[in-house]
Amino acid sequence: MNPARRSLFVSLVALAVAAGASACGESPEAAAAVTMVSYTPDGSPVLFSAAGIDVYDQLLKTRIRRISTGQVALPAAASQSLYSLSADGTTAAIASTPKQETLAVYGNQSRAGVFRIRDGALLKAFQIRDATDPTDQLSMLELALSPDGRLLFASTETYGARSMVLDATTGAELWAQDGWWSHPIWSADGTTLFATEMDLSHSLATSLDALDPTTGALKWRSVLLTYPGGDVTEATGTRLTGLALVGDGTSLMGSGATVYGSCSLGCGASFPFWSAATGNLTGELPPQQFVSDPLIYWQFACNASDTCVVDMEEQEQLPLRVFKTDGTTLLTAANGNWESPVVSPDGNFVVITDYGEQAQLTLRVLSVPDGTIVGSRSFPPLE
Image: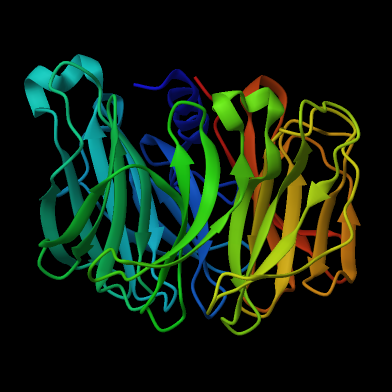
């Protein structure tokens, strides 16, 4: 397995918390690894972990619903998992892959399940035909439900990668191709899948592609990064690390770094726009300046009303920024050990993960209008 990708995957699953534990006196649940926070359209935060799927009120004060995923998910200590919530908030998916040391027990194949959010019903469970080598650990790279939850994009890796779309209602594979497509984003109507084709050996996005989700056929391609002769130190273009659908679905917005050859300091942050219909580059926000290595990862997300949040991983001296896609800044906030910001559908809140002493983790709800912390939920420290 590619060491760079393994490192990235490990960093994603390193948010070990007790998914049901509460700062408000709620009975603690078994320790689990929270890997994602998302929002339903009505503004309810959804926490995904190996212990289950938890739906909360806006300020994280009350857990509304717990959905057990034990029928599908492998034990947390024996597996790695990815999650996805459909844009309409009705359906969630989980995909689990066994760790190297548990292959003899669980086999070397990913398993997936699709759940209904309103009542927790398991709608379908199935296996995924992976890019598998029985001698090496399998990793789930990407998972993304279509807006209505009926289609599921997945990408897996051993020494190579395999990307596919499955019918989430039956588990049937609609198409598959060798290769890794990352940052999957669905069009609002579910008729196009946007993703970046990755150079697996360097974990770099080389092009932004629009695919027919039912056939895998390429609709258009926009080149992002070139490095003739394979020398990434001479790369030119945009090193994309995030992607969002904006402008009522008419545009794609990216986050990343503008790369000029082997520059290390002074390369500007890049926030380009492309037409969702043609892939043509249509504009770019005025670039900001990095204060260190320009290839550091921007954490980036936008909601359906064109409110975006950006944070630079491991760069505490740079503030978290909430802004509109026209460049208007709504909030800048001092960045502690903050990671994985997610903006609410109405744009009034941002959920962040905040690490304290001894890896104590707290989810905080940040008010965008005034910058105050209006809700939080703390969890036991990492083991």
